[in-house]
Image 1 (tube, rainbow, N blue to C red):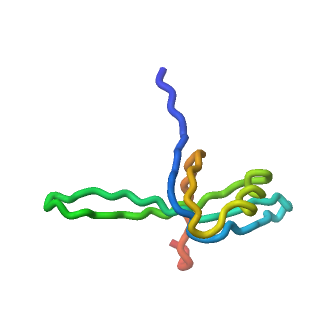
Image 2: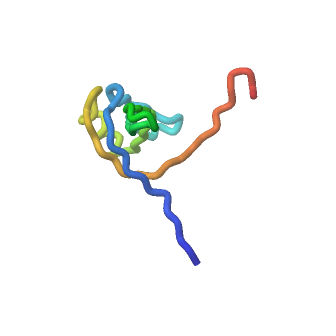
Length: 93
């Protein structure tokens, strides 16, 4: 049997100061955006670049550490898992 894991390491720049949040049940967490960038040479030899934005969420002690230590422009490496969510558009689709 083959096993798989949902583990990712991201290295990039923080897009803004970490924000403290709280759920309806008073569980504290923090949110911050992270930009990762990849670059490559295209077939013409010109450099191309593409940035991807990630939303990082840290719960409890990890979230508190994010609030204390992460500010806009910080260069960081994080390890975690990826979760994708589908959010319905405002028109309901």
